[in-house]
Image (cartoon, rainbow over all chains, first blue to last red; front, side, top):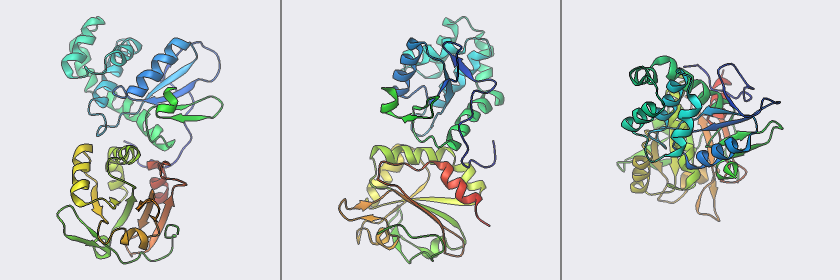
Length: 162
Length: 154
């Protein structure tokens, strides 16, 4: 965990980021959480639109109690090369985010479930989610989803979902 | 009326804790206290704001800061609000005489009968070290602003 969370610009595309869409130019950067309905709307719309965008985790526990577990599940699936498949599966059914539902998704994706379950609780995965969360805090993110467009425009909450 | 400026001594005040006991300036002596004034318990923006601060509470503590939520809601409403959010940040009530503490800090919005959204950081010596007030209650101060203020201390 880093020391200060003072203001800093949104990091541009960085190693380890989850990027989707056409490989052309600066991406839209989205901070979102899997238990947030507006985030689901935005991310489904972006995935359908084909533009280049980055997904970063911004789980807020007290607001969305399963958001952290879901974020870690997506990262753990990512360690087996299936981040986006888990991402889509989480947003597709936000009413089912308890542990058995996460295992069921991992099984459906053909993951090694034992490894998935160990990975999602690992320090490395937690640190990866925390990295996104902290860069969001430093950039002034206060709600989800928050989207930073390549032209510098920022939209947040229902407005960002469009 | 605008929020008390940095460099001025914090006014004397009396708020009520969850158990109904008094909470005064003496209770923050020796602390770096961040008073988080918010319009209403259960209103959507306040909910996001306290949820977010709760998520980085460990880092606030590591920087020596203690956060308190302040509104004109009754202690019972604040208690229910705190439980619903699942946050541990202490809530302080400015219910009766209504808004007296908010007025003393320059954050009472007369027309709305509520505090404006504002942050006041009071240093261990009782002097205001930093303050922030939103252009309107919908503007939500990021946690980064508080960390900036904490980093700027001598």
